Length: 101
Length: 368
Ligand code: SF4
Image (cartoon, rainbow over all chains, first blue to last red; front, side, top):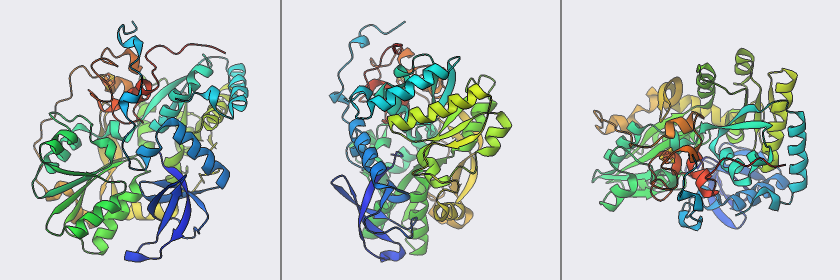
């Protein structure tokens, strides 16, 4: 939950409710995100987003590389509020029979 | 499942690893503070790649793992109340309390909702004026700006049926507590990159100077982690103890000042108990006096809870770096992510879950 995922700002929806909001695209998954902490971020910029809040800017190349890594690590869905990584997809390791000394 | 060998930057990673192995004169104990980093290290086999050049000690930086049992029990008590819609990040649901967990309370009829952002909880409060909406506000400095904004907006818009159960923890006091411990073996820290996105790293130079410990702000990619380790080892070999930023593309010295300003307003520093570790002075945030009206602990009478840690769980030792998850007898047998005995087996950021997901039940093999 506290990893933070980089994404691209695709829309800024003004100051509804007194706080700057926008849409961010995370490699295909789109989320409503609060932009209040990056007051000068613009459409097309990349940012690291934690639990619905853009916290830090990032350049495009690093953002895309990080997204790939998080996908490979299997933590992207969990970070974006989806189901946690499904435990049974992990092989039941053989060593569970005989724990190491 | 991807291991480092499959990454496109594997040659660069191997070159960095070789440089670290060649320059380390002994196995330097280095702590990666953040649970996300632990997950990446174990999943990518970075510890294996480095052989005995460094010993990576996994730090307490998994918010799910260190949220105190008493707070989990308070959450369970509040979530069970009929008038309450209890909102939480998804990975808190399986965390074992003394007697139950949020999943079980939900199956017994508690109205518990998993939300992506605390603003979703605030929205629920707006839409359900007759209900009490409570958000479980946990985490490090990374999630705190989101939680602070939710409380701030509740106050600004007069949303009185919203409240927050706050159990925030702070990284710098935890580092100091680790360094002060007589059993401390840590010689350098990889500071958590995303905590530093928010807080910057202005808090670290006094710590580096006082305990003569290198602190390297580090990201989460395999290459980031290797670069952080490389810089830490270089300092250790040279007898230096400085703060370095190896995650420059996301972190500045100042951090996010607008976020820090709101954090200052919404939260006050408080002593906090860390699950498995104990009380650390001034290591947490609670709501400041201005926002007391939105404090769920004050709104609901949940005092007098007697806590009971699950038997057989050795998460405390894992969190303090004295026990590797696979050394716990329950690991992978009685205790799995589906049936966690301890909080460190729940979230992907917990050390026990990181080892389990990577199928790592044994001592890391040393290979070059
Ligand atoms: S493997 Fe399970 S029981 Fe053992 S320390 Fe980790 S969480 Fe606790």
